[in-house]
Image 1 (cartoon, rainbow, N blue to C red):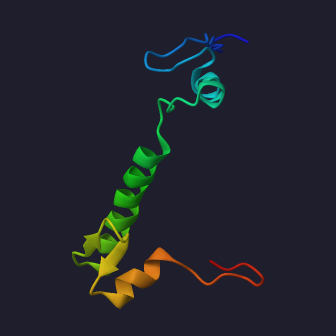
Image 2 (image 1 turned 45 degrees about the vertical axis):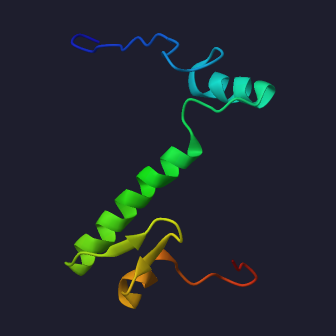
Length: 93
C-alpha cells in the first residue's frame, strides 16, 4: 500500500542489565546468581509512592505529610483513606 510504513524493531541489550534478553534476561540472571536486578523493586516502590502521594495531594488540593519509615500519611485521616480501599471477602491485609 503506497505511503504505508513498516516499523522494524531490533532487540538490543541495554547497559546495566546482566545476562541477555533485556529485562527478562536480567531477571533470570539474578534468580540464578542471587544478584540484585538492574530494576530494583525497592526503587520502583519508592517512585510509585511519590506518584501516589502527589495525586492524593492534588485531589485534596493541599499538601500532605508522609512518614517514609511507617509508610503512612501523618495527621490527615482523609488523605490516609486514599492509600487503601475496602477489600472484598475473603481478602484481608
